[in-house]
Image (tube, rainbow, N blue to C red):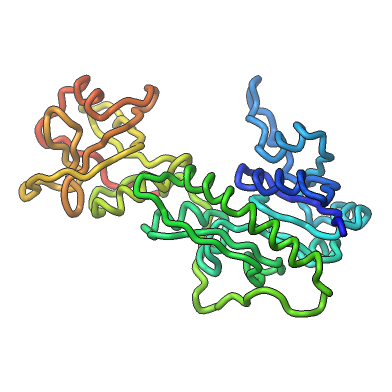
Amino acid sequence: MALKIIVMGTGPFAVPSFEALRRSEDTIIAVVTKPEPPVKSRKGPPPAPVRTWANEHSLPIFDPVSINEDAAVEQLQLWSPDLLVVCDYGHILKPAALESARLGGINLHGSLLPAYRGAAPVQRALLSGDPITGVSVIHMTPRLDGGPILAKATTEIQPDETSGELEERLSSLGVDLVVDSIETLRHWDGETAIGETQDATKVTRAPRLHKREAHIDWGWDRSKIDCHVRGMQPWPIAYTEIQLRQGKPPQRIAVLRVSPVEGDVAELQPGQVTGDQELIVCCGDGLLRLDEIRPAGKNQMSGEQWLRGHQLKRGSTFSAPIDS
């Protein structure tokens, strides 16, 4: 029996699974997404990926400020969906919204639940230096990412992978899980317990990233800095600062790629620059080369290119973290 489905999402993580549903035997009767932000320039912000996808396929869009407000819940009830499919939406559904669908809702989440419940599971796994991660599909409850797990898949985090690249890969990994979970619910009687209950003792949190977290602490070890650099891409981007001229503001430098190098650090302090051919910085347990950077107001370049354009004084040091 074909199902009437409402999909709810905003960001790019949702699009591959939503597209698979669009091509399936089931019917997407509405696309719920966040409202467009206010226009602050002539160009305006780029459309959110789910909105763009819905427009490309002429699917009806519903974008209430809150999906839990009375008017929004009434609209969901009028549609009388069989199932809600939620991914990368940005709102937590309260019971009234979930109960608008006969089979409730499922959510595709970018971690191996119960690890990394919250808004930034992909980034937090990479920042933590985890060797593996994955995706989970849960049958939704009002508790954030706390419902029973219907399907799960794991993958190794690649050593040079950024959060953006990992998220794209996980979004594809989740497609079959979403389809399989819908098949499970298609034949569900609505009463029998389904899925794997999450172990509350293994819950970890993945709060949304903030710009203030992006500053590099050169006292960290090389592995942690590498994870930080990759985990902060595509936003908010890891950065450091250096005082180039006395009395002038420090220059901010976004750091995009680093690699470890061998060398003696006995007389160096964390953050201190060494070498005159490559941009090499002392950190907590050795030396790191800054392979790709983007100085404020400039294009992306290699650390070597930046170094050729600046005569650094002996002992020049990248700044310590700023309290925010």
